[in-house]
View (cartoon, rainbow, N blue to C red):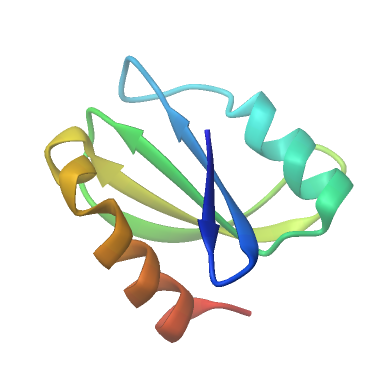
Length: 84
């Protein structure tokens, strides 16, 4: 899924489990050089800096499913406080 935030496209991936390869997010980051991504999943909230398989660095905001209804507010906070 893609989310439009102030003219920027933010990639959001929804995972069915607590882990996963995030292949789609990695491909998006490598092609678009986008520094911020979001994953909705069955784990705890956290923000991590990670790299794609190609070595591109990006920030990943991991959000538990129950915060999905607050996605716009969390994206605004994330982009205002953590964007590279």
